[in-house]
Each structure stands twice: as C-alpha cells, then as structure tokens.
Image 1: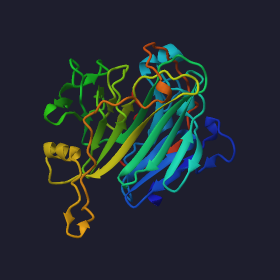
Image 2: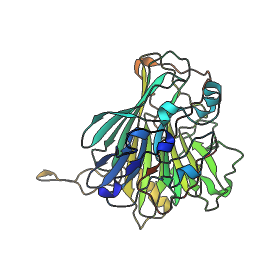
Image 3: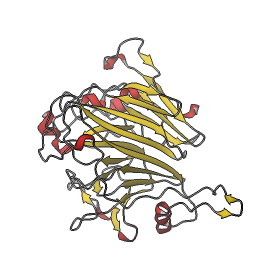
Image 4: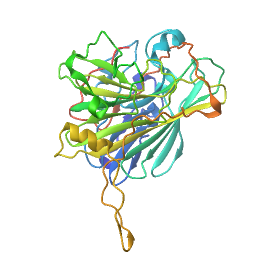
Length: 379
C-alpha cells in the first residue's frame, strides 16, 4: 500500500499558506487494488493493482507546461461540469475550467473503504459537486458516485463530466450503440484527423482507437455508449457509466477519448439536465481493473469483456462457491432514465462560462516512468 501513498507539496509561489507542506492524500486499498485521492486538489492521483504500477498519468513537470491562461495540467482524474461547448457563453472563455470544481475539495465522510468529498460553489452555474469514492464490493475496482447540487438559481444546462488521464495503453475500445442514422463515432475535433487509427468494429459493437507514438498526432472522438476501456499488456481498465439515459447529449456522445502520445483521457458524460435550486443530478461510474488473459486475440478478448459470469455449479450438497469469474458483463447501453431527482427536465439553452482556478500545488505521486511533461489538450 505504501507504493501508492503520495506527498502533496504546497508551493508558496502558488499562494498557499501555513507550513508549505501537507500530506492530505486519502488512500483506499484492499488485497487487489489501491487508489489515492488528493481532496485538497479534487484529484484522484493513483490507481492500480496492489503493489503494481500506477495507471493514472501525473504530470511530472506541470509548472513547465503552462497553457490556457495560467491553467496547468496536473493529470489525475477529476469531475467538471459540461457541456464544454457552452463554457465560452457562460464563463466568457473556452478554457480554463470552473475553479470551484477544479480547485480544493473538502472531505465530508471517510471510512476504511470509502470517502466522500465536496467542492466549493461554482460562481458561474451555482452548483456544488459531491463525489463518493468507494472500493467495489467484489474487489475489482472503484464505484464513484458523482452529484451536482444546485444551490443558487440558474438556467444553465449541465452534464456530469469525468476526465481520467491515464498512461498510454496499447489501444482503447469505446462502446458504440448509435441511434438510428448516427455514425458509430464522432470526431469531436475535425482539425485533428483520426486517419486509420480509429475504426468501427461492428461485430463486437465497439470502436477501436490506436494510440499514435508521434507527438503531433492527437485526436478527440466520442461514441454513444455505456463504457470505455484502456487495454494494457497486463491489465484492462474499464470505465462504465450508469444510468445510460435516452436523454439529450450536447454532442450526441456519452463516452469520449482524447488520445495523445504520452497519455490518454477516458471521459464519461451524463445526460443534459437543468436542475432547480435544491435539486440534484447524479450518476455512477464504475472502474473495473481486470487482469488481461494472455491467450486471447482481440476479437476473443472483446467477447471475454462482455461475457456474463458463469452460474455457480450445483451438486447434491447444494451450491458450491464458484471459481473466479470472468469480468462483470459490459452493457450494450440499455436505455435507462437519467439519474436525477425531482424529475428535472432537459433544457436546450446553451449558456456557459469559464472560471480560472488557482493552479493547484505541484503534486508528485505514483509517477509512471512513461509519463512525460506534455500538457493537456487544447480547448
């Protein structure tokens, strides 16, 4: 477990006070997986198999890659509000993100296998965010419940948007279940062509995205689907979002992939909602970390990912404990209502704004040798 414990350094140059140093990292671990959270910066900074390499990309030189009007890319995993295409109208800029969600969070509950943290109130859309991060009961990963709570009047439509920056995998799969007449995937940045690196694999209901080793080759794609997976030599990390609603999406996608040579971003999006004061919108993102079978080709591997676990064998003495099952089945995007309380309706109005978060302190944690100093994607 000590492998994942990180020290968060507060630099006086960034405007912090006190001793200039703190170790506020929350570590949750079981016999199989470990996760490290830095609530003072609203980031998950470590995740992986117990005693193994960190899969989360953490920028080793964030202050040397300043972009976007003073915003620094520290890597990690976070929750922002979307849709991003509305930020300019609401915040008066395309980037950086809302400082309340991208800044310091406060831990409100904590146990050995679970924590809850809450953001400050957004000055732009009048919400605060809450995240419940817990080890999965079956030991396979994490269960993250994301919530926005409207605390001030506002008419801005919102999406729950998670962004997880990972060290470079071999390839990624995006669940692809388009509506009638929709393409299997969308290039969300047409100026960044995907070329032959992205292809639809209809036999397995996925879009396969290869990661280019060339620095200048980047792309941002999205699909209408319930899950996205990063495939490594030894493991597969799956992010699955639920409920997967039949509601509206700003860009007709519910999972997104930003691919760059030194890292990728796995992103999930909830349906569009316009909550009233006192109302909540919420969803759940499950992280499943699976050891990759070595004897399966890609097609068989995709089928294995979707396979339901076998039923426990039964004998004269009754049910016996089953052998280790295959991974939990990945859904084919069953249509479910958005997880919002009080029957909040979807709005189509686009208004969004930008917030400049004071850059969080330099974080040095779980650094993977493949991590580079490359900054985040351009807005």
